View 1: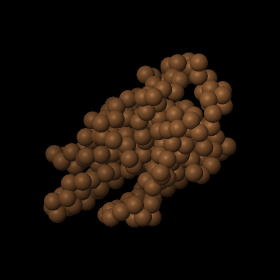
View 2: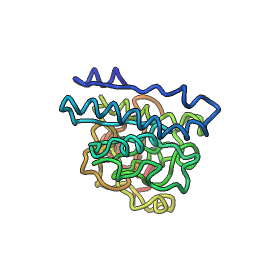
View 3: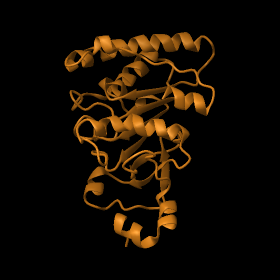
Length: 237
């Protein structure tokens, strides 16, 4: 991710290695320490604010996605401009209050990428904009338990410099998606680094099975590939 950002432009990047507080297989300890990690990151943010820099974007993968909630809490009264959750962790976060997990109140704009819902990642919407890649649960041609979860950072990294981009069509709810009511439409929004902070709702994204994953706008794919093929792929009537 570092290389992608530095090739895109000038950024100050901070990476947090808190592996000593969450060593496998002690996941329970890692969850317990999430608040402490968030507090430490918030202290760094307060130091950054002393330089009159306020353009701050937090990106957290898996349990790190839940840590951003604690960062936001301890950073107050400053409000984080943007938080991106990359398949926020599900285990031990079922039924907890919003004060203990990532949700839309944690930043001015919260966008979330779902790739392994109901397995290692959360299925519920937890941002202003939630993007479900390939249905949000399993990615194509990979191990459904591990690799699908790790596709979230892969997709985000590609989005930083992608010319096609990851574009999703809007869906009212995950239940509607499962029932087949969320067919592709022209109401498209881009996910990843270029996601606009005015984006609201739930979106479904299809990807290629291997890099480059981004397919661009499905309407462009339709024009380039032929209507017959795409109508079979998406069951367009």
